[in-house]
Image 1 (cartoon, rainbow, N blue to C red):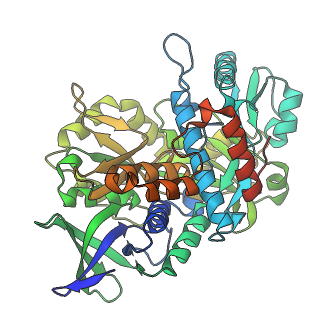
Image 2 (cartoon, rainbow, N blue to C red):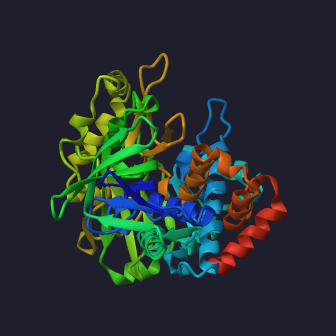
Image 3 (cartoon, rainbow, N blue to C red):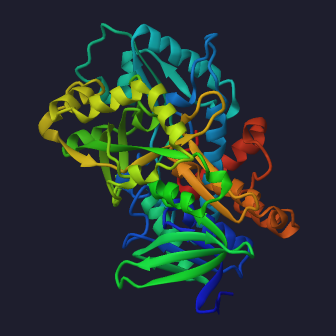
Length: 498
């Protein structure tokens, strides 16, 4: 239970940020230890208002079914499937946890929809790569239903509006996965937090900004918080702190002053979408069609023509178009980047700047693009796209991780990075992709790292296996279990399973 010591609230856990990561961690911890006390602090006046909001992310259930950056081609010409297998396994974990939540009547299944996932390329070289990728992935059971075609007639059946008006002077090729999904992480996050608020010992504070994190002599953490409405400040003492504040996590990690957080920096990348306003075009397309990223582009900027379901309405987006801002959050400050530069991370940040000239050139090109330029990029995927049918939407802000690396000074990481204190009393999530789709696996691993003794108990093991039935097993190595788990999650979530 929470208590009051010397005028300060003392709780077991503080979660900073009310997005999908904090909501998932809070739900798992409350199930594992029902008596746990948790305070959640969110600087905005709503839950999931930043990265988890439907308009601020791709909404793709990232399972490596269509994202080409997860299957790089090695120097010897072979396809590296290791990251794709890991991400696919992670998304299966998410599906299992969400199915358990539905069966427990904690959430409704409407936040996730079946939307086929496709990879689409043109040109002999790209088609050859895609064919190799298909051959490599279908060797593994989780990808067995992936189909490949170079036949324009078949491609037109899969994605009619993409093929309309297209010249076939170049070879075209695509892969098709019917088991792909679209996920509204905003709806999911709000449902989880709403349920948590009904639990004893869980308190949500909106419009509360964490200003300081300091370690006490006894190992606990003292959190300084400002109420943005009343302007009052107070302190909360916690045994464990999770920093899941999206782009705001880096500055809070720096304030914690843990040695493990030294040397990390961040590079912000903004995003924009073109949103279709023509209902006839929206209805004719039903897939997430991913292409190849431009040279120097970050993975979050891989172009895709994207069927979405937002506020119970079908939508069609294309993008994202990258932009640059010194903000670390969509609702952040232009001083976020300058203030993040410290003595401990300046060398990695300079090294990354010098070694990523193509990224800089790409961002300059993107920022300078006019609406006509954006339309030309869209027309590579949708040849008959008309300017009057599309309008520009501002997407979310992401911060790519910069960290030290021996011999290089620093490297730019495009994945997610969990930084934990040596004693496991504090953890921070940095990075962007694949993010929300793998939130369950990320939080499962975090719990194992930060609560190792509890995780050894039979009680916690049993509860984790109830939430994630394949816990401790690898689905890619167990076809029978893989099929059984997918049949179950498809049935519970109302998804395609073939």
